Length: 192
Image (cartoon, rainbow, N blue to C red):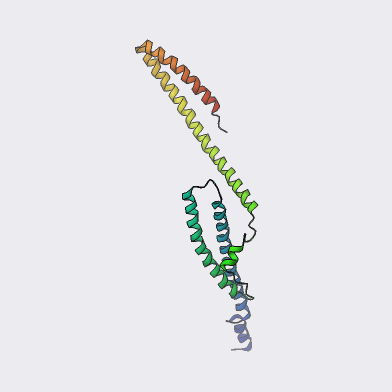
């Protein structure tokens, strides 16, 4: 083995410059993944906590949210442990976190309650548009049902007029009142 070959082995082998460089990059990547997971869990926790303050929430929903928070607390503790392992593996190491540190944070990253409120309004608006789409379909179904019922009743009244004119005239008189109501409903049911 030549002097040049031993230099390459030393640079690229365990403990070499290249090896240490890639080891540091992998450690940093694992640290970032652990930090992202911790941040994700904390933001979810904050959203759940904000839901608890809603006054119109029922008891069952409140219980479900409480149980979800308990489960998430265990997941957050595991994420803190993973974060601490990765933080100490870095060169230079990052400070470790405790549950108390996390519980004291009102936000992690760039979490902002005004952004949350904007998101809630956005999703409510998006849901309203979806509801309008569903209602437009229902309007079409209702208009079709009104039209079909009117055609069926008119056909039935015409058949009754042939066999029993007095009953047919009476039904026709009542049908005119109902069909006037149906016309008003049909005119008021315009899709958006």
